[in-house]
Image: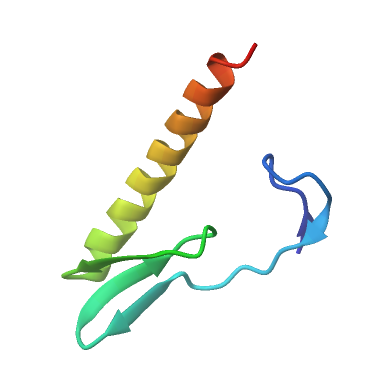
Amino acid sequence: MYGQREADLNAATHYRSDRVSSINGQFFFATREGTLEGPYFNRGDVEREIQRYIQRYQQAAGLIESRSF
């Protein structure tokens, strides 16, 4: 996949992968920042938390941008 994320300075190739993994019956998701978030009890919980994570990240980015001079 070719494209540029809004935060990227240069165009690059990005590969989509399943960010959700299961370890010993517990679910986790990997972030672009290199963190592993979890554990969660089921995949539905993980999917919901991924959306919340993205919303928090976008909200934080918006706050930083609004305070830039």
